[in-house]
Amino acid sequence: MKNILEKYKELLEHPKGKAFLFFGFYALFFLFVIIFIQTVGHRDALLQEYEKGDQSLFNTANFLNGNFYYDYKITIDNVLHDYYGKMNLEEESFKYNNQDYYKNGNLYYLENNIVDNPFHFREFIELSSINNLMSSAMYFSKTEYEDGSLDYKFLISVNTINKLLYELDTDYDDEPCEIIIKVNDSGDISGITYFLDSYCKYSDKCNNLKIEASYELIGEVREIKRVNA
Image (cartoon, rainbow, N blue to C red):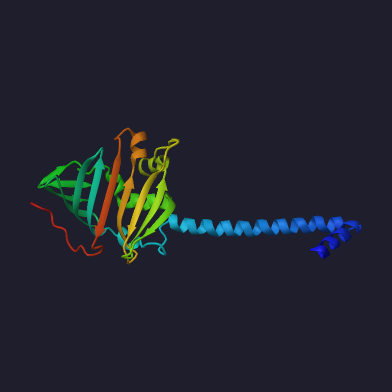
C-alpha cells in the first residue's frame, strides 16, 4: 500500500503524471460501464425469454395447437361459472349449467339452435389472447413443487390488457393483475390462473374476478361430435 502511495505521489509530481492519472481513471470508468451494460443486457435478455414463454421455461407449441380437454372456472363477484369440455381446433363441445353446447368457429349451438356465446370473459381464455398476454406480461417469480410441476407468476397492467384485448388506450395508475402459468413435470402448460380484481375496478364490469383454466390430455382429442344434431 505504501509503495502504491509513493508511485501515486511520483506521478502527481511528474509533468505528465496528472494527465496519465486522468485518462487512466476514465479508462477504468468506461470499462466498468461497458461491463455493467453487458451484464444488465444479459439479464434483460433472460427476462425477455421469461416474458415470451421461452421453451427453456415451458412449452407453448403443443398447447397453442388447440387440442385438449379443459375446465374453466370463472368466479365473478363470488359466483362460480364452470365450463368443462374439449377442443379440437375450431370445434368444441362443453357442458355449462347442465346443458350441452357445441361450438364451431364463432358459432355456438344448444341442441339444434344457434345461441349467444355463453362464456363470461371468453376473451381471456382464447388461445390467441393467452399467447399475447404471456408475451406482454412481466415475469415475477417461480414456485417449484415436489412432483416436478412449477408455477410461473407474471404481472400485467390493466392498460396492457385493455390494449391487447380491446384495442383501448388507457392510462390507469393501477395495481398489476397476476397471471399464474402452471407447468407440469414435462414442461407443458397444464393451467392458467388470472387474478383480475384491478381489471374489474377500472372496467366497471365486476368487483372481483378470478379465472382458473386447467388443461389435460393435450393433443389427444380425436373427434368432436355435435350433441343432438
